[in-house]
Length: 151
Length: 388
Ligand SMILES: [Zn+2]
Image 1 (cartoon, each protein chain N blue to C red):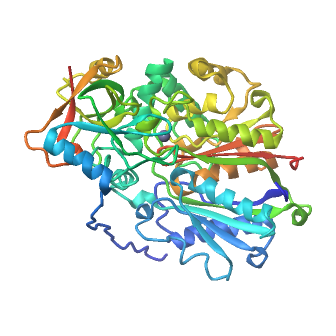
Image 2: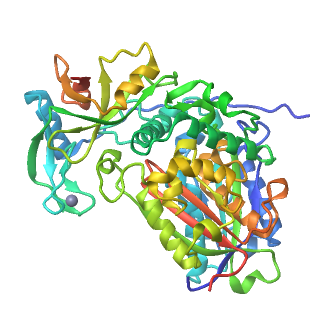
Image 3: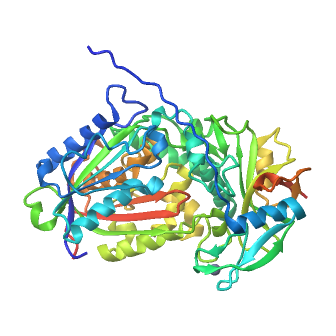
């Protein structure tokens, strides 16, 4: 019987992502003005949040910038309850929120909710609660500059 | 379709967490060898080879098929549409044959993810690096975001998810190739650890390794072989951003709009007007039981608001199609191959070669594929008769 050999491997590398002009402006607004910005599609008229440089449904460039929020409504959520390698320590709530004035929803972490009873917390989030974008003390121009907090 | 296309050869390794005795090339070779034998052809008869490999990082190397299938001097393509990789690769092969560019095509999908110990970390890289990757967005949390929304919008309960999972696991007990063979009750499933609310461990797919291969042939070279005819196939993309689909009037994030449109077109090509009665078997690409429920309305089984009722109906009404006689992806999810496995399982059912998991008298079967954040959807109809 041949002894079966295994060869250890590791796949890890650094990378730099270019955010592009629209997302750079979106992040700049977070950092400098603590504002959430969307763009209006000239064709379907939807206010797309987070901002991007074109509407992929209509294939139209988006040039009109619109401030949305800072309040909105939780559309859906999950509470990560198990530990996975490379993921943050549970429990963590992530949610899609439609900001007031927006037609699309944006993903972020929801903080400040009592998670001592997961089922109770889930029940509360299923009621589509209203939330606000709460900014960190020193915004860095990243999507992590704010979290959702319940009103 | 200009030329009739049929599946004449199928090869599958067992699906399991690890195949320590086989290199990735050997895993591919095992499935390909079996498919060629089943088709009763040798590699010289093949005009094109198409491989399906989803995120390369899951197999720890780029182009995992490179040492396996390239020596024979054929045109070659590699396809990656996430979870739909296996079905998209099969569609590419079918299109080669239908267009007359190939008489026979070999398609193979392989998955080695069992050794990717931080697979959820790899899956995080399939999401948008600009706006999303900083959050714990993975295949599991993505499914959970949809599951909680379908509970709110359509009234599904945790018990619905568990009942679907129980049926899939029960079916897998009859499939010798299945990775998980769990003899579990609805209560066992509801009591299994919560991964991400509302999804429990036994409502989620395992990390499986294995390979699947098929030989597709043009009608004029099928000869007397046992064949499952492709009666209709359709694929369609959707906007990637899940947040863009949440408020969409024509079909929200939990309505699987492009799966519905794909099904409509594939059914039309196959002459299906009443899928509840004209389809005998459905093999779903649904790695989570909650994702399975979202396919029911999209596949014409019920109105969206009747989804929760259909969960009970499909368990009780024997005139309905049999869902996932193989156990589906909850029993084995070799990601790169899973979409192909759905088509292969349907073809086995149509050819009457599905062994212990065979459903009696299968005339027509439907296979789905979904990939990424469901921005890719495929529907394939296979039948005992060639298309009109
Ligand atoms: Zn538009």
